Amino acid sequence: MDLNSATWMVRSLDQRVSSLLITDDNDVLAGGWDGRLMSWDAEGELRWSVQTDDRISSIAFNGQTVAVASGLHVVALQWATGETLWSKALEGSADEVRWWQGELVAISSVYDIEHNDFIESAVWRFTEHGEEVLVERMDERPWAMVSVEDRLFVGLGRPKCGLLDITSSPFVHHQPATISPITCGSGRGNVGLFGRTDGQVVDHQGNVCSTEEGTIEHLTCMLTGYVATNDQGLAVGRTPSGEACWSSKGMPIAVQMEAMAHGNASTLWLARQEAVNCRLEVWATDQGGLLAAGTFSNILCMAGHAERAAVGCEDGTVLVWDRALLRRRLDAPQENPSAPADERTSALQAKLRALRK
Image 1 (cartoon, rainbow, N blue to C red):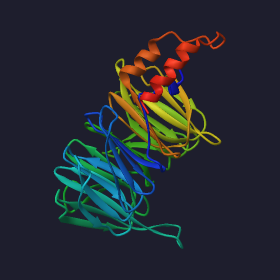
Image 2: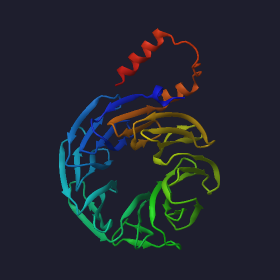
Image 3: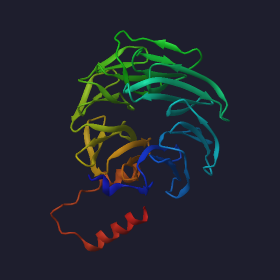
Image 4: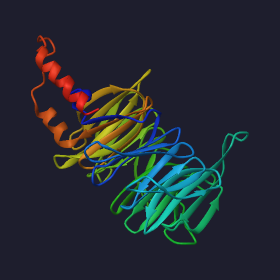
């Protein structure tokens, strides 16, 4: 099925979309490369639009306050109006933000052009009112932040590598048996997984779950098992015990995520980079079957949960799919492409799509 025919909502940020978030109430937040942040409610109505200092690389929401990583700053905004509550400058770029146990955790990094590498990073904690609680500086860059029950980990690059437990201060470093930089991570409940440059997927205790071909670029914990993707565009679905159950090979993958309940599992959304655009694929992870696909402008970010999925594109488009609508489209008989089109039906479909824009 063509995903273009099943979109529930299409909106525009008028700049490249760099970050997305869908709340538990199906509200959508989108941040752009030029600092714009827009909020739409569950019905698709614009709630507010604000301008921040710089590219928004991460969005976090705790039910009352929106926090974003915007260029060199962490900015907190009022959920209802988008009004700025406070803003704090970090050392280097603000990479990621997350609400954790009542505080805002932020990661920053300093990139040196001459060395072509990150030379310093830091983990920050702020109260909900913007008061600095602590800052821990390090030579390594944290490439992934993953929560496992009541603990919070970051996966490190060189020189130290391994995992850093940042739940309390001082932080505790955990060194896996094999030294290899962490590239990505994903968590669900009591499971935390990290991908490494040597192709291994390890859990938060350092146990090797599987070994893939090449560097792990994307890792997603699913409702059952996980999906690891390498730098050559090979996605491998595995059971919780690490056994391979399906795979898909194609163009390199720009971004992936889990979204929408499907049967006894969930669906995996893969954005494969093509010559100019992206091919978006939706996979049934319990069977490995391709459910739907579509071609869109380059996809730069994704967000999703059990009921909805959203992607943000280079041309500024934000597309949202609803599980109930997608399910109906998947269950409907597919049209015969060779049959003549009904002009009245085509006109009605065009009007419905326009109403959602």
